[in-house]
Image 1 (cartoon, helix red, strand yellow):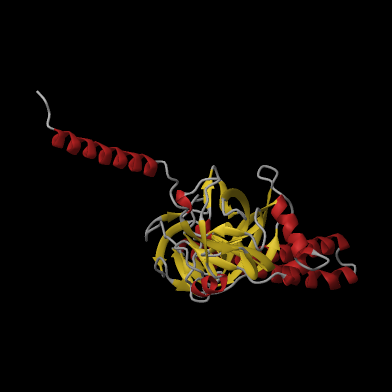
Image 2 (image 1 turned 30 degrees about the horizontal axis):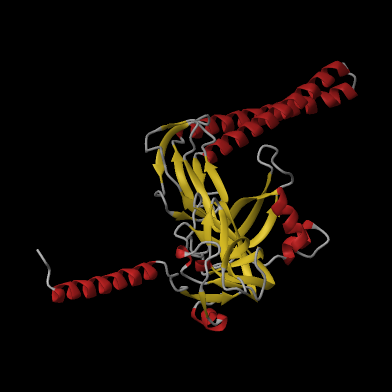
Length: 386
């Protein structure tokens, strides 16, 4: 069938239009997408305080096991678990009747010994003039004097027994050796108490000051010695600034502490040395057994500062994207020497004046071109202070 010329013309025009549209679509698919516009931060230096943290276990100033020094039944418990007591306050009472009878017997023996002294003294006084008159031999006098000396010694022994019995009676009332808080009391009234019991009657903890013990590695200890002035370790400790305590909920304990002592030697098994910081604890907020972190400050006069959100991690290493003069990005590893809530302090990797991508780094890879949008470090520091 012969197609009319008018129809052939319409088909030809439609084919040309379709071919042009396909060509434009193909050209569009081969076009390079525009470079993304990303905020860029210029690395600066600033005075800052960094912190080094160490896990710590807390102990009270005095932790005393309260034990009985005599055997017997627990007659009275004067305190409650968790109560605060003062030094000298009665805590427990052991049945003292048997020890009271022992003291009565010791007193009676002392009286007998004193009577024997008087008896021996009378015999010596009787024999001395007779020996002088040569009525009796001096052997009898020497024997009488020996008996007198034995009586005096026996009286001294009896007196010591009275003292020992009195001490045992005193031991039946157990008092607090220091002020502090009472721990758990595993024994109840009527329990048989022995000096050899494996468990104490309770634990008394003086927490007016809290000792925070932590460990320094050999490298940390050398850095600590080189950081502070002083000819001796004691002088360096005095020149060290106060330290903070980060408690279990990550809040900062309101009272600052002072470094006070360093162990005499390194532990061969761990390669670390034990260090102690002392924190005031008048309100009793902290208790023996609490955990936390001691935070040691370090003042840096010219710290290289970058925002934390400008970094990313790969295999335990931290990187940033540095923007080159050609506006292409390159990843570089950085070494972190300290941090605050919003910033890292860098010791290696980037230098002041270099430009790094501030945010949006998740879409980047090495060699990608970007359109930098500079952000002011002053405005950033004002919004997020160091």
